[in-house]
Length: 151
Image: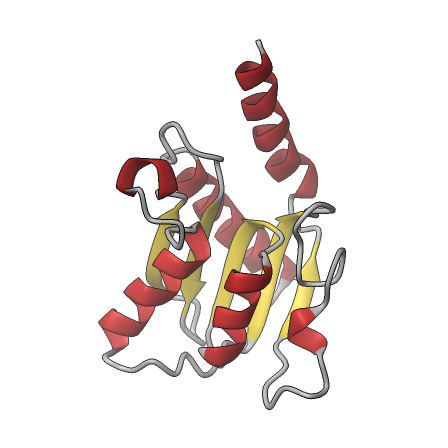
């Protein structure tokens, strides 16, 4: 995936993050190998009462439904915040080819910061990881959200 394409895909994920009404503004998209959008999602835990309604999980589910196949071989997961253990594990199990993320999550990240689930050699699939795409923009969205909650 070329750098301009990654930035463009991250902007799609940022738009999704903006839809996370009342929830932590995280957005995710899944692109097929040609770069076409297969699925998108934003955090919906607060809206749905579902603890698994993370942006990545919803985007992966929607992409799989669109393909009619749980294996997302060759696909890319683009997310505004480093995935947690649940989402990193789901990406591995879905066989995504790459995970691209913006902001680092030093408190719950599982794609290199706190844990590194996706590069664990004991697993049968290890996606490529590209970190820091539009990191400042992704991080600002989160910083502003939490600052408003503290006020």
